[in-house]
Amino acid sequence: EDKVVQSPLSLVVHEGDTVTLNCSYEVTNFRSLLWYKQEKKAPTFLFMLTSSGIEKKSGRLSSILDKKELSSILNITATQTGDSAIYLCAVDPSSNTGNQFYFGTGTSLTVIP
Amino acid sequence: EPEVTQTPSHQVTQMGQEVILRCVPISNHLYFYWYRQILGQKVEFLVSFYNNEISEKSEIFDDQFSVERPDGSNFTLKIRSTKLEDSAMYFCASSALPQGYRQPQHFGDGTRLSIL
Image 1 (cartoon, rainbow over the protein chains, first blue to last red):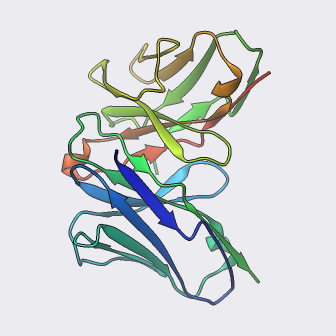
Image 2 (image 1 turned 60 degrees about the vertical axis):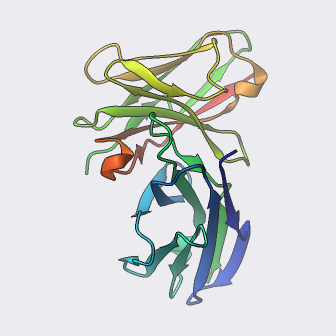
């Protein structure tokens, strides 16, 4: 069964800290891995990763995929209270035709001032 | 920036009643999806829809569920006879092309469905 596991489940840090969130996956075939940020409502898209070893960056956020280890990390540097959210990892297995994602349970990040 | 819109934001219904959740996907998107998230649990895939038909559905999407694109803009999820366990946040998503072309799915804000 395809599976996506995120760690830690929750994290509390102080503003200015750097955090690393982990996602590991087991899928029959792999096409891409996506990171989403979920605040009160909709998951909002952060990154899509398809190639191993290539870092994607957006401001203080960055992410990298390791296909050999079947994992990805999401880094947030100089955290701010606005970074508080649930960070979801989703994997798109290429074996399906409907383009569904398999989501992890998410990492709940709380940044305190 | 274009976005996926969902209505209503919150729906409260008696068990056994039918509900219709509505979504307006991003206008140039061709692929539509419904997901649900039970409180405290992970986001789960329900169904994907392309070219006016279901392309994939999960085990959750049983005979009580149906989807429809009644016109050029709306995409609806109907639950025929709601059960208590249908209480969840329902997310609609759309994408321009399938993931093989590396386009992410964009999510609406969700409809919180509460079954009494």
